[in-house]
Amino acid sequence: MLFSRLKFFNNTLLLILVILSVVYTSCKSENKEVIIKKEKAVGLELPKRPNILWLVTEDMGAYIPPFGDSTVVTPHLSKLAKEGVIYPNLYSTSGVCAPSRAALATGMYPSSIGANHMRTNSYTNERGLPAYEAVPPSNVRMISEWLRKAGYYCTNNYKTDYQFKAPVTAWDESSPYAHWRNRNDDQPFFAVFNFTDTHESGLFEPYGFREIETRLYHAGDTSYQWKNYGASHANNRMSEAETQQYLSKDTKFNIPPYLPETDLVKRDMWKLYNNIGEMDNQVGAVLQQLEDDGLLENTIIFFYGDHGGPLPRDKRLIYDSGLNTPMIIRFPNKLEAGTSDPQLISFVDFAPTLLSLIGEAPKEYMQGQAFLGKYKSKERSYIHAAADRFDAETDVIRAVRDKRYKYIRNYRPEQGYYLPIEYRERIPAMQELLRLKSEGKLNEDQMQWFREVKPEEELFDCETDPFELKNLATNPEYQDKLVELRKEMDRWLRAIGDDPNLPESELINKLWNGSNTQPITSDPKVSLNNGNITISCDTEGASVGYKIVNAGNKTSKTWHIYNGPFEIPSDATLEIKAHRIGFKPSKAIQVSASDW
Image (tube, rainbow, N blue to C red; front, side, top):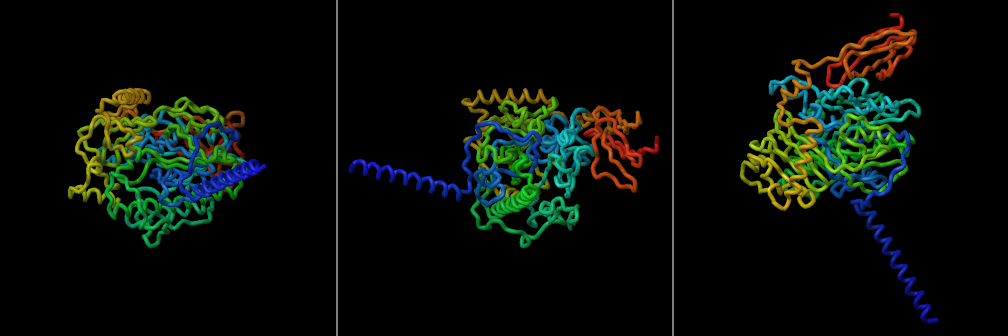
């Protein structure tokens, strides 16, 4: 009897200790900024016609708590991560925005369509070149146009920057007022919101970004007037005293080893994280609008950056600091909540994935692959990236990476890494680097970027050397990996038709089929057959859009995509325009029912 009571007592005590341990661990985890993730294992059962919301911020490395950096509190993104899946291995195709956004918009590598130089329409006069646009194959459409064809209401708020002018058929709305709230009742939507506070120019003096960012708090409210909409960056900045502060300037920052630990660099680190705090508030405003509209549980939410971080030796380079950007996806009803998906994902995978999520097969021309949805592909083994001209300065670099190793091929080894890009040299930390370099005060890691020549090949173990400072290309122990990635790069270059040594002048000549001027989309042709309007265009691959102008000159808000013959109202006039991506658009023509 005594033995039984002792056994009962011991078991009870053990149970109490276990419960206390679980409670303590739970409380500890709840207070911990870093979210502990389990790997995602099971498949997803998603709505057949989900809404899709993209929250895209600029110049964004893994600087937020869900990805291990608790420097600044991000309540909205942390909540999104707890209710969603984090993707730590997302990589842009370039370390800068416009080429990367071309990949997002088309599902094609920038260097395969003439979108690799940043930007195609700027700094060309200095090089004796005409401004131009990327020219993808004739069957290529922006992903938003494919979704519009599938019945989705597509909005962009408000940055474009695709290396080509978007056809009028690309979006239902693309403006600071663009919002899913303007769609038809019960129409599924694809909405993009762009957050620019985290852009590298947010590190400039004077501090901060523009009043126009309030558009995200007033999204969809066409009665709201932005004081500085359309104003230049310089005229649209705030003083430091006017800026909301999300963390103390005395915060201890984990400064990467390629930057010096000086007060000025720490000041820029503070700016970086403070900008993230403001961006998180803006994300929260959009998410609250989604929840207020009762749409949260029928919407797939993507949060990600347009490439890696804004700091010197981050942006524009194809080290992981320039390519890797955090992604969070929240699925309806918190499917797979609190998990991590470690698969490699490239920006070229987004377009095919969106089609897969709405049950449509990716287009054959797309060079990416679906990582979600009905047509999900086998996980990719490699991601690829390129770096060419940035503003007025040119280099030629290609990279391939698997889950652990990065191979870089330098096509101009005789040229140093550092490019004197005027825009980047406005960053105080960049000015500090240049000053310390001139004074001979940079250490070996910090001087690597300023080497006068570079090796033809580089190989990095990104697991043990995340800042990519130790080149293993000549190490005999890594020759098998070097050969593997070298062959993969050669395969990729052939597959996408990338000739890295092609001068930009010859690239333009190739895009324009030997002409010295940009091709122009032919004017649309209109005819009436059996009471229906038929529209055609002689330019292969041109999209045709039209607006209906009703009596009293009331024009439809959006350009409709022409999909086939339709009946025109007897009191209406049509405005019609044709546009192939990379070509100049046609003239807008008007026809009315009375013309027949």
